[in-house]
Every structure is written in C-alpha cells, then in structure tokens.
Image 1 (cartoon, rainbow, N blue to C red):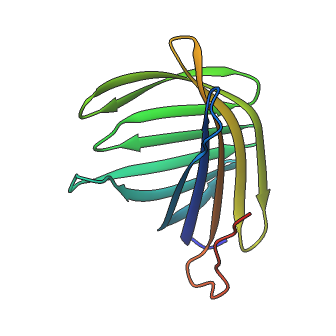
Image 2: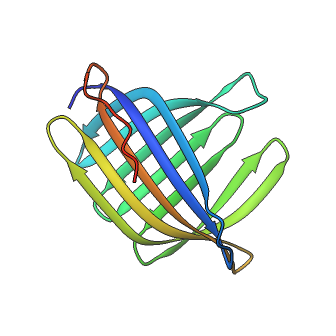
Length: 151
C-alpha cells in the first residue's frame, strides 16, 4: 500500500446499561507505514474549540493496537485481546483514568487497503462505563473508489 492514505475511523459507544448508541466518525488524510511486522497510521485531528491539531499514531500488530495522541489531548491507549490496560487521558480540562479491556481485534490487509476492527470495554475506577466498537480503514489517497462503508 502507498504512504499517502485516506483514513476512515468509525466508532460506536454503548453506555453501560443504556440502549442509546453514540456514533463517532472521522475521515482524514494521513500516512501509512509497515516496518518490523508493525503497521502504522499517522494523522492529525482538529479538536472542536481548539486551533492546534492533535498528532495521532495508531500502531498495529496481530492481537495488539496502540493509539497515541499528542497535542491538545495526550494519551497512550493499548488494546490487547483479553487484557485490561490503564490509560491516562490528559485534556485541557483535567485527567481521566480509563481501563481498556479489548475482547476482539481483527486485522485485514491487501495490496490496496488496511482494515482493523476492535471491540472493547471502557471502564473508570474499576467500573464499566461503555462497550465500544472501532473500525479503521486506510486506502491509497488516489483511490477513486473510496466510499464510506455503513451497516
């Protein structure tokens, strides 16, 4: 796959005990690298109400995904199947301690695309908060057949 890519990130949060789902979606340009058996996606993200972007890196190996954000918010989140990992989410408004428990991480790749599907639970202070699903898809930036995949 090429270095310059379009990245489509789609997330769905279902609050614990709730039935109302909260969808999140981002489509942006970025860079893709594959080094030492690891996939990397790099992209900038603008946060509402701020003029500086957050620099993001998603690092993926079989069974493991790491998301790092630097800028307005700072966090390192590790998604590892069947393990609970702690993440400190630093924002201009304060810090949040989150637990991430991934239950499923599926990776797919071809010569022209890269995809990952992650299912995980977010918790705070030892209590579950929300169940989440994240789908990430990267394709070459020049691909004329790019389309958003919806259920």
